[in-house]
Length: 142
Image 1 (cartoon, rainbow, N blue to C red):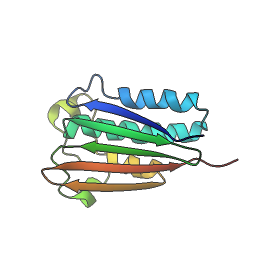
Image 2: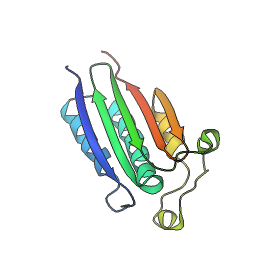
Image 3: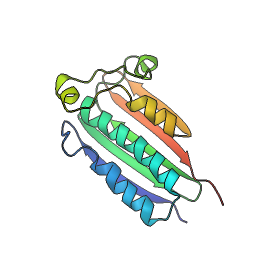
Image 4: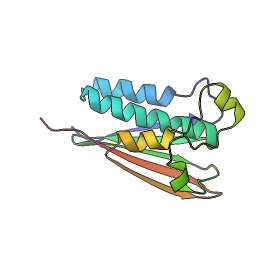
């Protein structure tokens, strides 16, 4: 399989439409015939990253590269950045506002879930400039 590149814009602040990019990616991965467990893990990571961009960063862009042996998901935003990554990685820690919490978001599980369901994850963040989260999910070979 030749590397397939997908790009999804993520609108900030729109919790009603949040999840659209991850749904589109999931459909594409199904059409490519990837294993269900790989699709599930990639979808969880993409959704959590997308929600973080909607709530915390006024949107951004998700780039996905799919090839025979892995899926790379890179989520970039120009939001406020993450002042303390170690703290943000703690389950339950959240800076989500009241509106997001009232709608059931902002439980502080986004980054921990992304770490849990990925094979590799890195966070590049600068306060006042934005954050890029890069995820790799390996595709097992038969």
